[in-house]
Amino acid sequence: MPGAEPVTRVLPMQRARAALIDFLRLESSGGILLVLAAAFALIAANSPLAPHYHAFFDLPVQLRIGALDIDKPLLLWINDGLMAIFFLLIGLELKREVVEGQFSDRRQIALPLVCALGGMLMPMAAYALINRGDALAMRGVAIPAATDIAFALGVMSLLSSRVPMGLKLLLTAIAVADDLGAILIIAFFYTDHLSLPALAVAALALLALIALNRLRVLRLSPYLLIGAVLWVAMLKSGVHATLAGVALGFTIPLSSGRGSEENGQHRPLEILEHGLHPWVAYGILPLFAFANAGVPLAGLSLASLAAPVPLGVALGLFAGKQIGIFGSALLLIGLGLARRPPEVSWASLYGMSILCGIGFTMSLFIGSLAFEAGHVDMLVLNRVGILSGSLIAAVVGFVWLWVSLPKAQSR
Image (cartoon, rainbow, N blue to C red; front, top):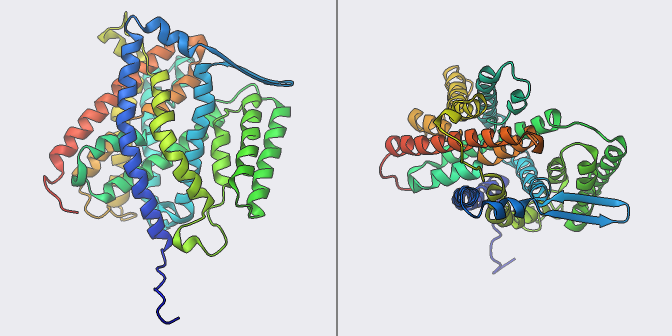
């Protein structure tokens, strides 16, 4: 039409890149909040505020509707309830990456997937080697398996534009892949005392969500309402309730089906993802860190770090992660099965492998499942290992990248 302005079409990969840039920016600042929340938790748990700190998170909170009764301390409402929203965000991100992001291209998927697999197996092997023969301690074998993407990107953001985008993309892809691995571990190894009636309700809720997706229902409210039913059913079933968030995320439609996806508008998954990001990054994850990182240090010494559980966790995070990830990359690229990302040197790739040893959020979460309230001593010891291993990985990874990356790089 004469005089009409040309319509600019935004390709799926351009949308994915724009979404990833927003994600990186938000997660980086969220990582700083995680550090502050963990620091405040340690201060609170080792000061005259300690009785109030523990009493606050032990506060009973009850929700009762007819015969439905959910009565848990505040700590478990955070770990089972609010963290389900975090896992919903993971589910949304995984679906977007699989459909139109990095995992949609088979040529780009091999390197992060194999690195993520190596970065899970080696830390678990290190932990198992140190804790072999102790059945209780072996429940925590998966604690050092996952990378905390918010924390790792927060440390990387301190280096500003010196970090090439390819390195950030690879770190994000590896972290997303091992988040998926952690989800599978939780589903298969930290599920017991199953309730068949509750599982039947959960299955019906999941089928209803799939039906909404197939019928191309675009309003988010039906998904969220049925997702709440799915969460309650999972909570009562014995399967960890946070997995309901992942299942819900995978059923949210990515495309609007109205021809508007070219300009990136009215896409239900992206609307929900962008809406949840600030709440998760600035609210849920810092609150989770504050609730779970409060380790009482009284009575602990350097000898405590040498106990099998904290030593296995710390070595798994710091040594196992970098060996597994960098070793996998070295093997895959050396065999010509994958290519090193543009502008990413071997030195910076190694530095990124060290940063992947920051396992803060997911490690604390898996640790809380492995050593529940009946094993308070194990809870404390595994948190000591998580905090020390993550801190060492953060400091050494930052220093390595500071030294190895070019001092000035225009972007």
